[in-house]
Amino acid sequence: MRNFNSDLSYMIQQINHSMEQMINERLESEGVSTSQARVLYHLYTTEGSNQREIQTSLSIKSSSLTKLIDILEKKQLVIRKESPNDSRVKLIFLTEKGKEKEKRLWQLREETETFLSQSLTPEQKDKLIEYLATIKGTLN
Figure 1 (tube, helix red, strand yellow):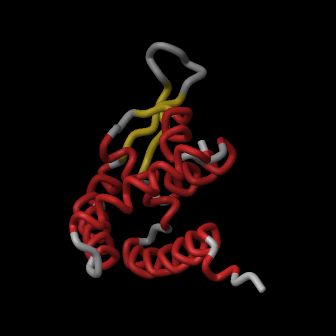
Figure 2 (cartoon, rainbow, N blue to C red):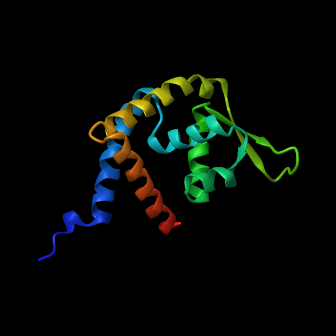
C-alpha cells in the first residue's frame, strides 16, 4: 500500500498550510494577512509597480490581486495612481501608513525565516531553496 504522507506534493502542501497559519498569526498584530503582506513586501522593494508587474511577481490571478489591493486601499496602506504614460494603467504606491509597517513586517519575515531554517545548516538551506526553485520553475 502506498503511503501518500511521503509524497512530495503532500509534504509541500502540509508545510505551506502550517506556514500560512503561523505567519497569519504573527501578522495578525499588524492587521494584515499573508496575502496582503506579500503585496506590501513587493511594494517595499518595487514601489510604483503596476498591477500586472505585481501579479507576475507574486504568481496570482488578476482578480485576486485586485481584491487584495482593494483591501489594502481600505486599510489606507496603498493607493492607486494613474500612470503618467498611460491613463489606463494604475500604479500602486505605499501610503505613509503602509510605509510605517515596513520595518515590523521585515522583522516578522526575518523571525519566520530564522524559525523555519533553525534545524538546517546554511548549506542545507541553500540546497533546499535551490530544489524548491527548480520545482517552482517546473510549475511556471
